[in-house]
Length: 267
Ligand code: NAI
Image (tube, rainbow, N blue to C red):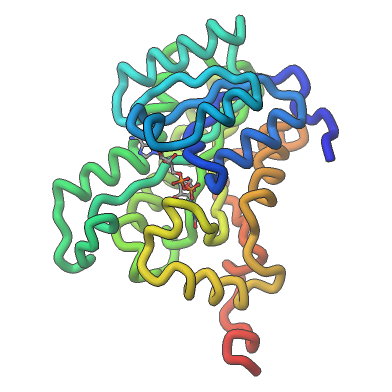
């Protein structure tokens, strides 16, 4: 159901790899709501992902950019502003990758070079995105920036490994940059803490299927789907959420407020 909530708005969406990606669903919903989009992903992801298929469907150009490269970020936002013929109203950061998780390295035996790389890709990239946008003055007033995060930033989920610290850093960047972007340009910055979701990044975590079932049982409303997350992002990018900023917003069917749910014990 479309309500033209993003009619006339322009947005840049990071992280649509394939149809399972949360960013894919967000891009589809934003388009349905009337937004014009620019899609972006790492050059490598363009080779093995399906982003060009999405781009065709949404009449959106794809500008390849590695989120760890300042030069790529500069080209990306310059290209987006040129394409839109004006500023950007919203940006979704939907990027996550852990080298230690991918290479099955235990948390208490971590490789620090990989950890640095993980932080660079999954968290510092968010600062880089916002710093580039601010330096180029590419955001329109009352714009909205959001990044996807996970509750492992606050609670222990052992197999999430160094991604927990990545997400804590990401959420902190949202608060700190939210101050600067808010005072300078009335731009809001938030993180959305999403339920476990069956995607390439999600299912890379050990025991993900079992954990997905557990989280679904713990949450009174069940796990929030990628489609539901897309709806929430539309709200955050729309004028309905203008005064919400510097928040970590749980979108998790109630999981974050639960201690125990009898359903988990089969009672
Ligand atoms: P996904 O695998 O579809 O998306 C991750 C994206 O990050 C991919 O498109 C990948 O190409 C991109 N990426 C990796 N390195 C990059 C780089 N250097 N530059 C630019 N892009 C790069 O998986 P998903 O689940 O849609 O992930 C999106 C976001 O949602 C991530 O931040 C993830 O941590 C977060 N999230 C996912 C949950 C899940 O259970 N799937 C739960 C809560 C948050």
